[in-house]
Amino acid sequence: NAVCTPDLYLFNAEHKLFYRGQFDDTRPRQGKSHGQDLKEAAALMIAGKNPPTNTKPSVGCSIKWKR
Image 1: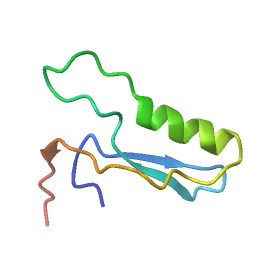
Image 2: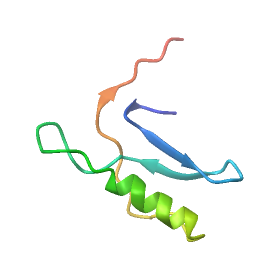
Image 3: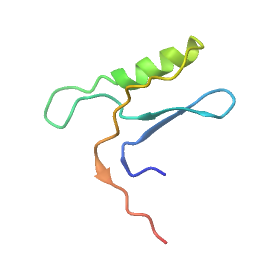
Image 4: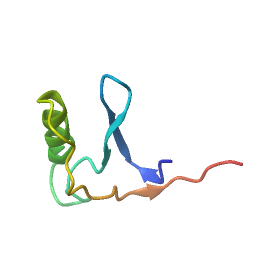
């Protein structure tokens, strides 16, 4: 169900979706990307905590799916 690139999905050991969202909040020409949103989600998952609830949708080029 990805709608744009990059649209990131993080799955846990049971193959269940843990995180879907943006890599970080940087945008083109705003500096170097740091991946903070994905890093925070991964840290929560590794620590056995609940997924983040304040996720932001990915922003990027739309994906055109063939039918």
